[in-house]
Length: 355
Image 1: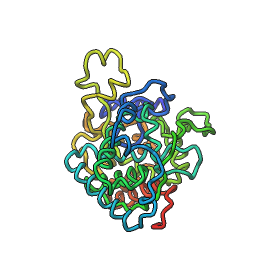
Image 2: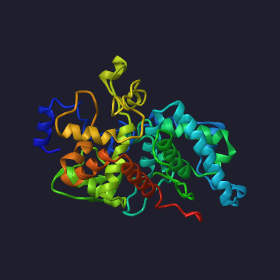
Image 3: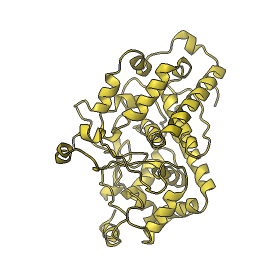
Image 4: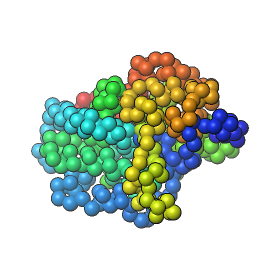
């Protein structure tokens, strides 16, 4: 945010503190975006690398056996239905997982270094040691266990499983049914964390240098980033609505030794993950947009919401604010826009005869 905008936030007393620049811009989570890849193995990466037996085999990226490769589209649809039912049951039991599954899908879909190419590809299993992907081992671990315990769901690629799980998690908490084609291929290595050709600009907040969005991006930077993914202004605002059922990191309950030095291991094991919206957590609705408008008119009670700089940029910019206002008035329109954006996010690399 520009200095004047930052001063304005401070003058209002702020609903809550705005997160630092390197926080996540999408999804359920509290992670650092755009940081260099660490050479140390984080607990998240160790979780996957340390898996043994059926669980490790489930996550292994290898060509499917002939019986799977030759299976019919009907079998794939049955596998998808089975996975959806399993994810729905899991989210209904643990609603906080909804935002985590959507964040997993976004973080697996968005990191591409070529405009117009995207969609889940399972590369996230090679990227868990990046600060941006903190705690994504949780939803990924749930998917791994589901796939290891059920041969019918294991026939789907990890990329397909991630896309479908995010879609079903949305529906499980009251969102729209999101139909997705199948046929995504699993990667054999990590995607790049940095753009080979950054989108330069005079203002640092307008620059796009990473393959995941920096939470300090201005409205100009947000437009440039999401345009690379083939998403419109309407769709980028709708996808931001995922913060309505997302969660962020907190120091509450953290051991004293961790408070002295916030290591990746401490952040990974943080005992408290408060919701972005304190009164309507883990529900798909348009409260996020209503609260943004209240923040903009200085009518938001302290502690009602936790907004990132990219959140408030949506209401400071008149062009983006019109979509915030529309979604705040019309929850059905928000559902339609979110569904459209999610399909675009997950569809580009799908190669299925079902399309």
